[in-house]
Image (cartoon, rainbow, N blue to C red):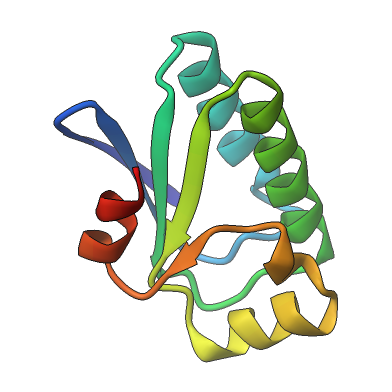
Length: 110
C-alpha cells in the first residue's frame, strides 16, 4: 500500500494505492491518526487506485470516520470503484460515509 499526501488549500488529500486489507491497515491508520492529531480538519481519501477493501479495511474506515466526527472534522471519500461500493452497500456502511464520484464534488462538500 502506497500512501501519498497532498494539500489542496486547507484540505488534506490522501491518495491510497493498493488493497486496503489486514496486511496494511496499520500504516493507513497511523497516517490518518497523524493527520487528525495535526488538527487537519478536512480530509479527502482518494480510492481511485484501491482495487479491494476487506473487512478489516471497512472496520478501519468506520473507526477513522468516527474519530474525525468526534473531533468535529470532516472526512470523505472519492473515486470508490463499483466493487468496493457494492461491499459498502451490502454491509450498509455506505450510509455512514460521505462518498463522491470526483475530487471536485468532494471538495465542494467541504
